[in-house]
Length: 469
Picture (tube, rainbow, N blue to C red):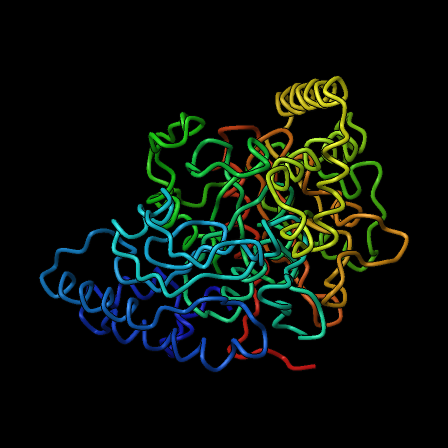
């Protein structure tokens, strides 16, 4: 349960570990060894890590141990076992992006996220799995294979940050970097029963830029809200390499205490007006929203005046895929995931006028949501309309053409660049369900406050080993 104190090192949160490091009751070396042991026990069943750097991690842990012994840690996450998604560069490590087309050469520089984590003393254990170039909402690739759901290993972890979410669910490391250009933090967080936040665009620098450009946000996936906030303290600062990282958050994320809900205006939209949702999921969301209302929030069932923007999103998404494959030889194209190659080829045929119309439609959606939030502080929806389906396939049913067909709650808020998060709110038939909280741009702490209340209202179950099915 999220509110309980853990006794096994491998089950502890970052907050708990940091407190024990400070009191010298536990060493970062012991915490790192516990995480590495958990990886060794679990990774063969779930395939969350594609690269593990045991010696590098132990070396960093020993350096952290020396700092804590001198009472001179670099930050609150100094010594905390962490991971980086394999779309993000880590110097002297492979950077494969889940693709057979990638080079086996080692990266020569840390990406901003990696650099900030290292400078804070975090112990980076390795890199987590992603589908090829993060192109879809599940996690499998020709390079690394299938990443599986820890709650039922026949089911998908979701994606594209599936490895990060599985690692968080099993505490194969405590703090996990993820990315989200259409739901890739929130989808696997929901399927795996953990917390994930896509903060306001620009808060966390991203370099090199994503192929999906301004759709893509970086963010944390962790077991608890507070652990993610510890990460945000470190990584949500501008970097000169990312021209878009010009948004500056004033304050300290981890100091955001839970605030009363009296007077908070919540819009609850179970379907956004166009989504078919599993009734059992809606029951769980209803219970959570009712609990918020009982705490003083003003809840209204209302849907923003929007229509499904899937065509707008697909135009931008396919164009991004086209950019990735544009320089590839025929031999390289034959190595690609056939689904990714297909959307890339579709993207290369998009007329520039149609592309600019999609840009205009995106702006209109953003204006509509901004006006919506002038009346409502928060929008709540399910994170996904279904629980995790079978692993190894891109869609839930044959009638669905693309992964976006089963993720209708997530990609609209990449188009608008709003903060959006997924918080666990129960299970259906043994599989986790996520609740999505969306706020106006720059109002991330409002969404986080709601998440903290849900976390207390609905204690989350966690695993110490995958459930093999």
